[in-house]
Image 1: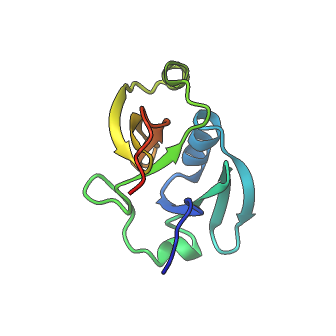
Image 2 (image 1 turned 90 degrees about the horizontal axis):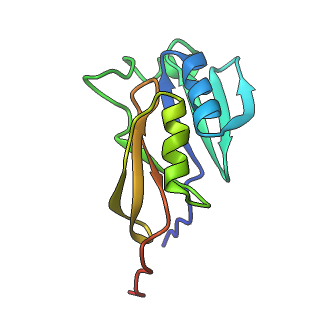
Length: 139
């Protein structure tokens, strides 16, 4: 049996590395972890996980075919758990970066709780997830 505990990393194929990396650094607080320019792999750290950005015109990116666009995406969305959760502060921070969103209640790994949805400059959908409203009973 395989027991998964958390997201290790996600990989996004991107058209504009600069705009996308600025978004994750400036808006979501990521930081550079590692740049492997020879193969076209740029890694950002978010908490204990990594976001890998792979430009479509690089060695790795070219292996994935056509660029992500409105007609097709590589991923539906990625959910990042935000701790500590201060929903109104998160919304104000997003607004300061020109991003309008709202807090909605969605079911996640720990039960129903607050979520904020947004997209990065490449159109990848993201969910920022707060703690559950109440604990999920043991199953």
